[in-house]
Amino acid sequence: MATVAAKAPPRRRGGRRLLILFLILIVAVVGVVVWLNVAASAQVNASATLTVYQPAASTSSNGSDFLTATTGAVVHAGASVKTDAKGRAAITLPDGTLTRLASDTTLKFDSAHFTKSGSLHDVTLSQKIGRTFTNVQHLASGATFDVNGASATASVRGTKFEIYILADGTMTVKVFVGTVRLHNATASVQINAGQQATANPNGTISQPIPIVPDSTDPFGPALAASDAVAIGTTPGTEQDFIGAPLHNGEQQQYTYSYAGGSLVKASLGYPGSAMKLTVQAPDNQKYVATGTLPTVEVHNAPPGVYKIIVDGVSGLGTAGEEPFIAVASLESCASADVQQNGAVHRGYTSQDLIDAVQSGQVSGISNLKLRINDDSAAGAIITGGGTYNGVGWSGSVVLVAHNGVLDIMPTGGSVFGMNVPAQQVVQQIAAAIGQDPSNLSPGFMVDRLFTCKSVMIVDGRVR
Image (cartoon, rainbow, N blue to C red):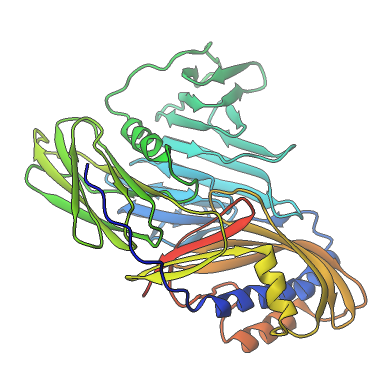
């Protein structure tokens, strides 16, 4: 496979303003945590973000009145998500935990809470009917993740698993990575990787057996493509695309931004027949793969926006076949401020933030200590403490990418000697930065936000 010549070192630009905005938002915690403490809230609600891969998907706050939804919609506790006969969707939690919905699936997001340190404490879902595939990120000690069916509950640790529920309530759980405990009031079994078990409508739970191949299962090709691009790339860089059913001679195209210079990797999963995967780099060189699981690697990858092209070749039938495309890259877990050929890459260490304060660009803060969580496939947890205008404070915030912008969620902390309503502080911060702190635009379209080795990485593209 051809390689691309390495380019000159990229220019650094524009990251300082975003860094300062992060600092101001951390200070906003000083006010917000007052409200948290006064409310005596032991846990803070976490919401999920909806991605609609293929329409239609709809949401409901009461389980009956469903309205058509689009990518970026926020799914709050108590809301339900439903896909129709052609719909494909997913909900993503702030830590990167992802639940995909196949067509004709209904899922209720019962509840989710943060700990005061910003990690997930508990998540509960209820699946009514259809298929879901969930990739649960590593849960902190004591955290829980449960999916309720009609006659049993699947309790999960960090793992990849699928749940299929028929109209009569029969619940089948397949485990691909990790373990799941399937249980109810009368029985309990542990399902290990490579196994499946079933809970019948009357509550009877079968013993685990090896996973039975199922040609109608849409998640097998998706899992294979995702696993293929995970090798040799940085966790958190993966972006997935699910296309509408593709027919012979048809083509679909997607984009992926990368400002790195190391490796971009793409893989195409589909049920069978013949499809072609083409990756067109920003220098217009093309890399092509065919076969059962076409996978392309671009080494010394030039910075810019990549085109990912899928062609239906032959044997796809009148109904077509649904392609699943996974793309990931290799990135350095280091401080960075890069913008080239329309692609943007920012890397922030806690020392970057502290240095900005010490340089005198943000006044009133002293004795500042900050920490960014070690590794997260999505989002970043920032904990900090210090003195602000003579007042001691500490707190935690969670930052996530949301529909091309950033969402900042305070999760806990303490303040002494300060009596300022949270809403007043938020308004002051919004006035200072000219933006809504919960809907922060850094000046470019945010595609990915994750942490590696305690460095917060923000990737995206020029709008």
